[in-house]
Length: 619
Image (cartoon, rainbow, N blue to C red; front, top):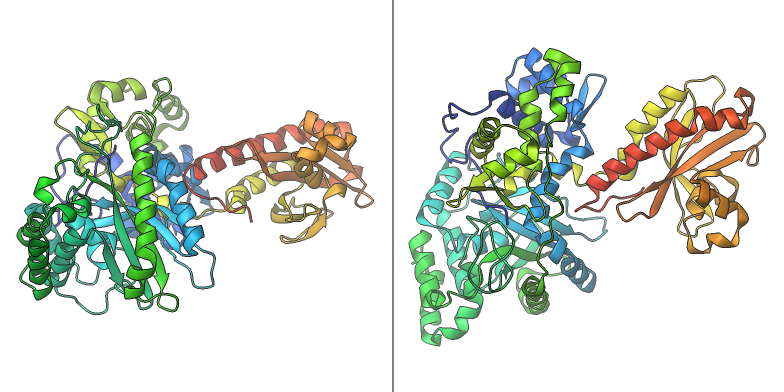
């Protein structure tokens, strides 16, 4: 499983609380600059900045920004729209590599979603990221007032419900880093996912919460983030003992946690039963009276609860939380009404971890970075090859490859050992990978800081729009994306691009038309189980496209192809519409259909990346 890290006080330096650490001599400077560009875009509203704003935000020379952006665009990690730079969905493959190696979203998300449906409240899963917490799954409810947190968002531990549970396992060094970060950033300005702190809180208060969490095995957030928001959290523990770092497996139980992940908060849930009632009562009294402060007192609270006797209780791999609003539940009400059901769900999650099958890695990747040489030949000085190669190193890790040696990473990327080593030194300095004593490297939660939060909310129309615009520009005709209505009788246009002709199809987004009379509709209907009853739809399914010639309106011709999700289901369709006078139907199929299929392939490729661990809205 990937390693756990803390939030760095410096946004782009090593994970230290008192400012950027000295850059190692062997670090790859262009790679660090590229990481800085991606982080500034991630922090920007909508994941976009102008080139000039990016220059100011990074402090880099404009020529350097231009070259870095050109390289990232070549990798399809960003796209240029005029002078604006936007994060692109393919960048999510970096965060996907971490989440796949972690395995927890794939194994536990179903339980979290079911609990959210049962309680009609939002449920999240979070991992510790040094002195912060980072979300790895969100099951939100659709309400007028709903959560704005995204997968990958980083929050300060002291303003959350999961934070005390992770802090219960902090070392004295962790507490020292936390105190220094608090002193350097009292308003939490380094956490863009949160509103700035309006009123300072005493460090001792969080220390008491951590001590109490060590005793209780659960923790509350009573409007610490903002008024009205309340949450309750319970740790999810890995079963058994004998952890094997990075593989996702232990010899005796089949599960493991990553290096640096905290133990202690989860150990206590079962330990309380083993401790004497008097010991727990005295520890509670001390925690409530303010006698417990910092790491030593949390350790004493754990000892009083019997945590020291619970060597096999399992380490905390993540924390599950139920989030509500005071209009529905007060903080005390969360404990009485929701805590039992949350604990039951967590117990089921832990059973899932215990019985999870061994990860089955596919063939080991090879030559992931070989393509960069050809790009350098084509683009010359505008392509920063060391940046592209360095980012590709992160994709070498993933499901079944949670921890790799330097030799394995060099083989997977096609880089020399020296180049792979320098990239890993750079990523370690940036907090993106962590080494282990067994000479392997694992991704850290901080990989999610590279574009994942804003991109996790990307919709299918947003994915398709730039590709539709490019298609319309190539064929000089209007292009559109549509989905099937809930009734199945109509299509609804969700994105479009004009072709630039005086006479062209001008259907606005949101327009609904009869499904059976349109090329888009026939493609969508052809994927339904009852499509075989219609000879027209059978032909569309067999040919993989639909052509409608002046059936909906005189003079209007359209051809459409499906857009499929990761599971192969048709979730949308794209079309090109034109006037029938601009060629025969045969010419339409010869000239337009290949371009249309290429566009659908591009949309599907980005949809597969974006939809691996996130829900992609189709409208």
